[in-house]
Length: 366
Image (cartoon, helix red, strand yellow):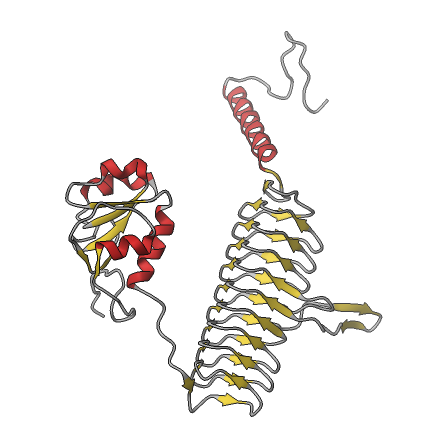
Protein backbone atom coordinates (compact mmCIF):
# COMPACT_ATOMS: atom_id res chain seq x y z
CA UNK A 1 0.00 0.00 0.00
CA UNK A 2 1.28 3.45 -0.91
CA UNK A 3 1.23 5.78 2.10
CA UNK A 4 -0.26 9.13 1.21
CA UNK A 5 0.77 12.45 2.80
CA UNK A 6 -1.26 13.47 5.84
CA UNK A 7 -4.18 15.72 4.89
CA UNK A 8 -6.51 17.50 7.31
CA UNK A 9 -9.91 16.43 6.02
CA UNK A 10 -8.84 13.96 3.34
CA UNK A 11 -11.43 14.33 0.54
CA UNK A 12 -11.49 10.55 0.19
CA UNK A 13 -13.38 10.46 3.50
CA UNK A 14 -14.68 13.96 4.22
CA UNK A 15 -16.87 16.38 2.28
CA UNK A 16 -15.59 19.94 2.42
CA UNK A 17 -17.41 23.25 2.10
CA UNK A 18 -15.81 26.50 1.06
CA UNK A 19 -13.81 28.51 0.33
CA UNK A 20 -15.06 31.16 2.77
CA UNK A 21 -14.11 34.75 3.34
CA UNK A 22 -12.21 35.68 6.47
CA UNK A 23 -15.32 37.50 7.67
CA UNK A 24 -17.43 34.33 7.32
CA UNK A 25 -14.92 32.31 9.33
CA UNK A 26 -14.76 34.99 12.03
CA UNK A 27 -18.55 35.10 12.24
CA UNK A 28 -18.77 31.30 12.48
CA UNK A 29 -16.13 31.28 15.24
CA UNK A 30 -17.94 34.12 17.07
CA UNK A 31 -14.61 35.90 17.39
CA UNK A 32 -12.99 39.16 16.29
CA UNK A 33 -10.41 40.00 13.63
CA UNK A 34 -9.27 43.05 11.66
CA UNK A 35 -10.94 43.41 8.24
CA UNK A 36 -8.89 41.95 5.41
CA UNK A 37 -9.58 40.58 1.94
CA UNK A 38 -8.71 36.92 2.45
CA UNK A 39 -10.25 33.67 1.21
CA UNK A 40 -9.76 30.55 3.31
CA UNK A 41 -10.13 27.06 1.82
CA UNK A 42 -9.78 24.86 4.87
CA UNK A 43 -8.23 24.10 8.27
CA UNK A 44 -4.90 22.63 9.32
CA UNK A 45 -2.52 22.37 12.31
CA UNK A 46 -0.09 25.22 12.88
CA UNK A 47 2.83 23.12 11.66
CA UNK A 48 1.34 22.32 8.23
CA UNK A 49 -1.17 25.10 7.55
CA UNK A 50 -0.77 27.05 4.31
CA UNK A 51 -1.60 30.73 3.56
CA UNK A 52 -5.14 29.83 2.47
CA UNK A 53 -5.94 27.87 5.66
CA UNK A 54 -6.98 28.72 9.21
CA UNK A 55 -5.38 27.18 12.32
CA UNK A 56 -5.56 27.74 16.08
CA UNK A 57 -3.54 27.81 19.29
CA UNK A 58 -5.16 26.84 22.57
CA UNK A 59 -2.24 25.30 24.50
CA UNK A 60 0.73 27.61 25.10
CA UNK A 61 2.95 24.55 24.96
CA UNK A 62 2.80 24.89 21.16
CA UNK A 63 3.58 28.61 21.04
CA UNK A 64 6.81 27.99 19.13
CA UNK A 65 4.76 26.42 16.33
CA UNK A 66 2.77 29.66 16.17
CA UNK A 67 5.97 31.61 15.57
CA UNK A 68 6.77 29.57 12.46
CA UNK A 69 3.30 28.93 11.06
CA UNK A 70 2.42 29.77 7.46
CA UNK A 71 -1.33 29.80 8.16
CA UNK A 72 -3.35 32.64 6.68
CA UNK A 73 -5.31 33.07 9.91
CA UNK A 74 -4.92 31.74 13.45
CA UNK A 75 -7.51 31.58 16.22
CA UNK A 76 -5.84 32.66 19.49
CA UNK A 77 -6.52 33.99 22.96
CA UNK A 78 -6.07 37.77 23.35
CA UNK A 79 -2.89 37.15 25.36
CA UNK A 80 -1.29 35.53 22.29
CA UNK A 81 -2.53 37.90 19.61
CA UNK A 82 0.71 39.90 19.48
CA UNK A 83 2.66 36.70 18.83
CA UNK A 84 0.80 35.82 15.63
CA UNK A 85 3.17 36.34 12.64
CA UNK A 86 2.60 39.38 10.42
CA UNK A 87 1.80 37.04 7.54
CA UNK A 88 -1.30 35.75 9.38
CA UNK A 89 -4.50 37.33 10.67
CA UNK A 90 -5.17 36.93 14.40
CA UNK A 91 -8.73 35.77 15.04
CA UNK A 92 -9.13 36.65 18.70
CA UNK A 93 -11.40 35.02 21.27
CA UNK A 94 -11.22 34.10 24.94
CA UNK A 95 -12.25 30.55 24.06
CA UNK A 96 -9.94 29.48 21.19
CA UNK A 97 -10.82 25.80 21.18
CA UNK A 98 -14.56 26.47 21.16
CA UNK A 99 -14.08 28.96 18.31
CA UNK A 100 -11.97 26.38 16.47
CA UNK A 101 -14.75 23.81 16.75
CA UNK A 102 -17.20 26.25 15.21
CA UNK A 103 -14.83 27.24 12.40
CA UNK A 104 -13.98 23.61 11.63
CA UNK A 105 -17.70 22.77 11.41
CA UNK A 106 -18.07 25.53 8.82
CA UNK A 107 -15.65 23.74 6.49
CA UNK A 108 -16.66 20.20 7.50
CA UNK A 109 -20.35 20.06 8.47
CA UNK A 110 -22.10 16.80 9.18
CA UNK A 111 -22.99 14.98 5.96
CA UNK A 112 -26.50 15.70 4.78
CA UNK A 113 -29.16 13.08 5.38
CA UNK A 114 -30.38 11.22 2.28
CA UNK A 115 -34.11 10.77 2.94
CA UNK A 116 -35.64 7.39 2.27
CA UNK A 117 -35.62 3.73 3.27
CA UNK A 118 -32.99 1.48 1.68
CA UNK A 119 -34.54 -1.46 -0.21
CA UNK A 120 -32.71 -3.98 1.99
CA UNK A 121 -34.00 -2.50 5.27
CA UNK A 122 -36.66 -4.38 7.20
CA UNK A 123 -39.36 -2.03 8.52
CA UNK A 124 -42.41 -3.10 10.51
CA UNK A 125 -45.70 -2.07 8.87
CA UNK A 126 -46.75 0.05 11.83
CA UNK A 127 -43.39 1.80 12.35
CA UNK A 128 -43.63 5.57 11.96
CA UNK A 129 -40.70 7.02 10.00
CA UNK A 130 -40.57 10.70 9.12
CA UNK A 131 -40.16 11.16 5.34
CA UNK A 132 -36.99 13.21 5.90
CA UNK A 133 -35.23 10.36 7.77
CA UNK A 134 -32.62 8.05 6.26
CA UNK A 135 -32.87 4.31 6.93
CA UNK A 136 -29.66 2.53 5.92
CA UNK A 137 -28.95 -0.84 4.31
CA UNK A 138 -29.94 -4.00 6.20
CA UNK A 139 -31.21 -2.02 9.17
CA UNK A 140 -34.26 -3.18 11.13
CA UNK A 141 -37.04 -0.93 12.46
CA UNK A 142 -39.37 -2.73 14.88
CA UNK A 143 -43.09 -2.64 15.40
CA UNK A 144 -44.44 0.65 16.72
CA UNK A 145 -41.05 2.38 16.56
CA UNK A 146 -41.03 6.12 15.80
CA UNK A 147 -38.16 7.77 13.92
CA UNK A 148 -38.16 11.58 13.92
CA UNK A 149 -37.28 14.13 11.24
CA UNK A 150 -33.83 14.05 9.63
CA UNK A 151 -32.63 11.06 11.64
CA UNK A 152 -30.00 8.83 10.09
CA UNK A 153 -30.09 5.10 10.89
CA UNK A 154 -26.83 3.44 9.83
CA UNK A 155 -26.34 0.07 8.13
CA UNK A 156 -27.20 -3.05 10.12
CA UNK A 157 -28.60 -1.00 13.00
CA UNK A 158 -31.60 -2.33 14.92
CA UNK A 159 -34.25 -0.05 16.38
CA UNK A 160 -36.46 -2.28 18.50
CA UNK A 161 -40.19 -2.42 18.99
CA UNK A 162 -41.72 0.69 20.50
CA UNK A 163 -38.53 2.78 20.53
CA UNK A 164 -39.15 6.51 20.13
CA UNK A 165 -36.48 8.74 18.62
CA UNK A 166 -36.59 12.54 18.28
CA UNK A 167 -35.24 14.69 15.48
CA UNK A 168 -31.75 14.90 13.95
CA UNK A 169 -30.40 11.76 15.64
CA UNK A 170 -27.41 9.90 14.21
CA UNK A 171 -27.37 6.15 14.79
CA UNK A 172 -24.18 4.40 13.67
CA UNK A 173 -23.61 1.04 12.06
CA UNK A 174 -24.43 -2.07 14.12
CA UNK A 175 -26.11 -0.07 16.91
CA UNK A 176 -28.95 -1.86 18.72
CA UNK A 177 -31.64 0.05 20.61
CA UNK A 178 -34.49 -1.43 22.61
CA UNK A 179 -36.80 -0.30 25.44
CA UNK A 180 -35.66 3.31 24.93
CA UNK A 181 -36.97 6.84 24.55
CA UNK A 182 -34.42 9.06 22.80
CA UNK A 183 -34.48 12.84 22.50
CA UNK A 184 -33.30 15.20 19.78
CA UNK A 185 -29.79 15.37 18.27
CA UNK A 186 -28.59 12.21 20.00
CA UNK A 187 -25.57 10.51 18.47
CA UNK A 188 -24.86 6.82 19.05
CA UNK A 189 -21.58 5.73 17.47
CA UNK A 190 -21.04 2.30 15.88
CA UNK A 191 -21.58 -0.71 18.09
CA UNK A 192 -23.47 1.03 20.89
CA UNK A 193 -25.95 -1.17 22.78
CA UNK A 194 -28.90 0.52 24.47
CA UNK A 195 -31.72 -1.09 26.42
CA UNK A 196 -30.54 -4.66 26.93
CA UNK A 197 -31.22 -6.53 30.20
CA UNK A 198 -29.33 -5.30 33.24
CA UNK A 199 -27.17 -7.60 35.35
CA UNK A 200 -29.83 -8.66 37.85
CA UNK A 201 -30.37 -12.07 39.44
CA UNK A 202 -31.41 -13.73 42.67
CA UNK A 203 -29.49 -16.57 44.28
CA UNK A 204 -31.37 -19.68 45.36
CA UNK A 205 -30.57 -23.22 46.43
CA UNK A 206 -30.76 -24.33 42.81
CA UNK A 207 -28.58 -21.54 41.42
CA UNK A 208 -29.22 -18.14 39.84
CA UNK A 209 -32.67 -16.85 38.90
CA UNK A 210 -32.71 -13.89 36.52
CA UNK A 211 -34.83 -10.95 37.69
CA UNK A 212 -37.01 -9.46 34.94
CA UNK A 213 -35.68 -6.05 33.88
CA UNK A 214 -38.83 -4.02 33.21
CA UNK A 215 -37.50 -0.47 33.13
CA UNK A 216 -36.47 1.68 30.16
CA UNK A 217 -33.56 3.83 28.99
CA UNK A 218 -34.27 7.56 28.71
CA UNK A 219 -31.69 9.56 26.74
CA UNK A 220 -32.24 13.30 26.72
CA UNK A 221 -31.30 15.82 24.00
CA UNK A 222 -27.76 16.38 22.66
CA UNK A 223 -26.18 13.27 24.17
CA UNK A 224 -23.30 11.51 22.41
CA UNK A 225 -22.37 7.91 23.20
CA UNK A 226 -19.08 6.45 21.95
CA UNK A 227 -18.51 3.20 20.10
CA UNK A 228 -19.17 -0.12 21.85
CA UNK A 229 -20.59 1.48 24.98
CA UNK A 230 -23.44 -0.37 26.69
CA UNK A 231 -26.38 1.20 28.54
CA UNK A 232 -28.62 -1.31 30.33
CA UNK A 233 -32.30 -0.63 30.81
CA UNK A 234 -33.65 -0.23 34.32
CA UNK A 235 -34.82 -3.14 36.43
CA UNK A 236 -37.93 -1.28 37.65
CA UNK A 237 -36.87 2.37 37.54
CA UNK A 238 -35.48 3.88 34.31
CA UNK A 239 -31.84 4.31 33.36
CA UNK A 240 -31.48 8.02 32.52
CA UNK A 241 -28.80 9.96 30.60
CA UNK A 242 -29.10 13.74 31.05
CA UNK A 243 -29.03 16.33 28.29
CA UNK A 244 -25.69 17.27 26.77
CA UNK A 245 -23.75 14.43 28.39
CA UNK A 246 -20.76 12.96 26.53
CA UNK A 247 -19.90 9.29 26.99
CA UNK A 248 -16.70 7.89 25.46
CA UNK A 249 -16.06 4.49 23.88
CA UNK A 250 -16.22 1.24 25.86
CA UNK A 251 -18.20 2.51 28.85
CA UNK A 252 -20.61 0.36 30.88
CA UNK A 253 -23.73 2.01 32.33
CA UNK A 254 -25.69 -0.44 34.48
CA UNK A 255 -29.42 -0.62 35.21
CA UNK A 256 -31.17 2.21 37.09
CA UNK A 257 -28.19 4.55 36.78
CA UNK A 258 -29.14 8.22 36.61
CA UNK A 259 -26.65 10.57 34.94
CA UNK A 260 -27.24 14.31 35.04
CA UNK A 261 -26.78 17.06 32.49
CA UNK A 262 -23.44 17.83 30.80
CA UNK A 263 -21.48 15.00 32.39
CA UNK A 264 -18.27 13.64 30.82
CA UNK A 265 -17.51 9.93 31.13
CA UNK A 266 -14.22 8.80 29.60
CA UNK A 267 -13.31 5.45 28.06
CA UNK A 268 -13.58 2.17 29.99
CA UNK A 269 -15.48 3.60 32.96
CA UNK A 270 -17.87 1.23 34.72
CA UNK A 271 -20.86 2.61 36.63
CA UNK A 272 -22.71 0.06 38.74
CA UNK A 273 -26.44 -0.24 39.17
CA UNK A 274 -28.59 2.47 40.78
CA UNK A 275 -25.70 4.95 41.04
CA UNK A 276 -26.51 8.64 40.59
CA UNK A 277 -24.34 11.31 38.98
CA UNK A 278 -25.53 14.87 39.35
CA UNK A 279 -24.93 17.52 36.67
CA UNK A 280 -21.45 18.26 35.29
CA UNK A 281 -19.69 15.29 36.86
CA UNK A 282 -16.47 14.13 35.14
CA UNK A 283 -15.14 10.55 35.26
CA UNK A 284 -11.58 9.82 34.10
CA UNK A 285 -10.70 6.73 32.07
CA UNK A 286 -11.01 3.28 33.66
CA UNK A 287 -12.59 4.60 36.85
CA UNK A 288 -15.18 2.45 38.56
CA UNK A 289 -18.18 3.31 40.73
CA UNK A 290 -20.02 0.98 43.12
CA UNK A 291 -23.76 0.59 43.01
CA UNK A 292 -26.15 3.00 44.77
CA UNK A 293 -23.40 5.64 45.21
CA UNK A 294 -24.19 9.32 44.78
CA UNK A 295 -21.76 11.69 43.03
CA UNK A 296 -22.44 15.37 43.70
CA UNK A 297 -22.70 18.13 41.14
CA UNK A 298 -19.43 19.10 39.47
CA UNK A 299 -17.34 16.36 41.13
CA UNK A 300 -14.26 15.11 39.27
CA UNK A 301 -13.14 11.49 39.48
CA UNK A 302 -9.57 10.73 38.40
CA UNK A 303 -8.49 8.04 35.97
CA UNK A 304 -8.48 4.47 37.37
CA UNK A 305 -10.13 5.61 40.60
CA UNK A 306 -12.14 3.04 42.51
CA UNK A 307 -15.05 4.92 44.07
CA UNK A 308 -16.57 2.96 46.96
CA UNK A 309 -19.16 5.46 48.21
CA UNK A 310 -20.67 8.91 47.90
CA UNK A 311 -18.63 11.89 46.68
CA UNK A 312 -19.65 15.44 47.67
CA UNK A 313 -20.39 18.15 45.13
CA UNK A 314 -17.35 19.86 43.63
CA UNK A 315 -14.89 17.36 45.09
CA UNK A 316 -11.92 15.87 43.25
CA UNK A 317 -11.21 12.24 44.16
CA UNK A 318 -8.43 9.95 42.92
CA UNK A 319 -6.87 6.59 43.77
CA UNK A 320 -8.21 3.17 44.59
CA UNK A 321 -9.98 3.12 46.94
CA UNK A 322 -10.73 6.70 45.94
CA UNK A 323 -10.28 9.59 48.35
CA UNK A 324 -9.96 13.39 48.14
CA UNK A 325 -7.06 14.28 45.85
CA UNK A 326 -5.26 16.49 48.38
CA UNK A 327 -5.08 13.71 50.95
CA UNK A 328 -4.06 11.16 48.33
CA UNK A 329 -1.11 13.21 47.10
CA UNK A 330 -0.08 14.11 50.65
CA UNK A 331 0.07 10.40 51.52
CA UNK A 332 1.96 9.68 48.31
CA UNK A 333 4.53 12.38 49.12
CA UNK A 334 4.94 10.99 52.66
CA UNK A 335 5.46 7.49 51.32
CA UNK A 336 8.08 8.68 48.85
CA UNK A 337 9.89 10.57 51.60
CA UNK A 338 9.90 7.49 53.86
CA UNK A 339 11.29 5.35 51.05
CA UNK A 340 13.97 7.95 50.28
CA UNK A 341 14.97 8.18 53.96
CA UNK A 342 15.04 4.40 54.30
CA UNK A 343 17.17 3.98 51.18
CA UNK A 344 19.55 6.71 52.30
CA UNK A 345 19.96 5.10 55.72
CA UNK A 346 20.71 1.70 54.20
CA UNK A 347 23.35 3.17 51.91
CA UNK A 348 25.05 4.96 54.83
CA UNK A 349 25.25 1.74 56.81
CA UNK A 350 22.64 2.66 59.42
CA UNK A 351 19.68 0.67 60.62
CA UNK A 352 16.52 2.57 59.62
CA UNK A 353 14.38 0.33 61.80
CA UNK A 354 16.11 1.26 65.08
CA UNK A 355 15.60 5.04 64.96
CA UNK A 356 18.03 7.60 66.44
CA UNK A 357 18.90 6.90 70.13
CA UNK A 358 20.38 10.40 70.53
CA UNK A 359 17.00 11.95 69.70
CA UNK A 360 14.96 9.37 71.52
CA UNK A 361 13.08 8.32 68.42
CA UNK A 362 11.46 4.94 68.22
CA UNK A 363 11.11 2.39 65.51
CA UNK A 364 7.87 2.34 63.55
CA UNK A 365 7.55 -1.34 64.47
CA UNK A 366 7.55 -0.80 68.27
